[in-house]
Image 1 (cartoon, rainbow, N blue to C red):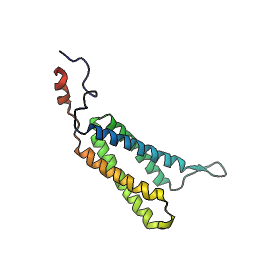
Image 2 (tube, helix red, strand yellow):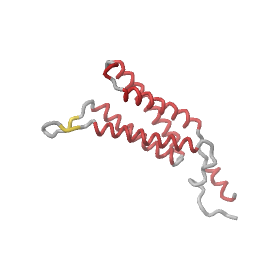
Image 3 (cartoon, rainbow, N blue to C red):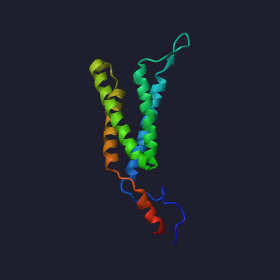
Image 4 (spheres, rainbow, N blue to C red):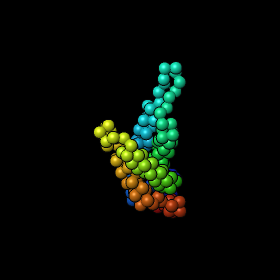
Amino acid sequence: MVQTASTGVADQSHVPGTTVIRVLGALLILWGGYRLYVVISSVWLDEEGVVFVPGFAGLFMGGVFGLLTIVAGVLLVRLHRAGRVFGLWVCSVNLAFEVLAFGLIVFYVPARSLGLLFWLLQPLSIVLFLVGIILIARWHPPREIERLGRIFD
């Protein structure tokens, strides 16, 4: 019997680690959305109606990293081959950014003025990207030739 449907995306459930990669992709999408929410809520209007952005460079980079993280998460949820390389790159850059930001904030801001949300979210985001790097590096998406060979199964 000849299979007429494409085996591209629908027949990848047999590849080891696909569920973990999809969960990681969903977590990256959620983290990127939260990062964008933080960036957007940090911009406000002053008395004259002029947009005021405190720490523009940090917020701009946070927004860019949030968008890139959402894109990497979508590619990982779809199990796209480009998601592996792009996801590794995004997780590595975000990990470096988060560790640097965490260190600078702890060094320059007194610990008693930092809230519980900071002490929970910063280490969790560092752990998310570190685990993401490890999981994506161990995941091997199916090659195109292997998928073409399953047409006649």
